[in-house]
Image (cartoon, rainbow, N blue to C red):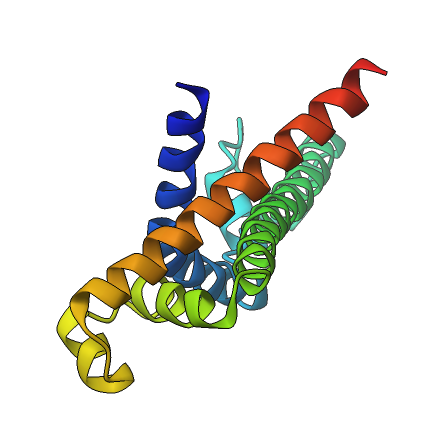
Length: 165
């Protein structure tokens, strides 16, 4: 029963690969072009208890509020960048592990799994490209998936053993 859960996880991971790649592109863009709260937005959002006097004088209380808002703005902008960075790292780690695990398969299995799951090619496209029968393609895919299940199972045992010891 446990092996079936692992097999389902392997297939889910393989199917999620294209979405993970899209997430990396989006997160990199957001990291390079983060949405930032501007000083003007902070000042506009402040509800001043009294207007600035005609002389241009700003009270100490108003200045403290402005400084607090600027500090908060900087903190929020930094937190946003950190959240994006953490998510990007997590997604890239998943992709890297998945690509590494697939690269450990027999090259023929790797080719079929990469083209089917990673590149999203159909069985018909694979038949034409690789000049193989559907039965051969499915066999290579299934054997590759079973080897990935073995890898996941082994790594699960190693990490559980490491935590207990």
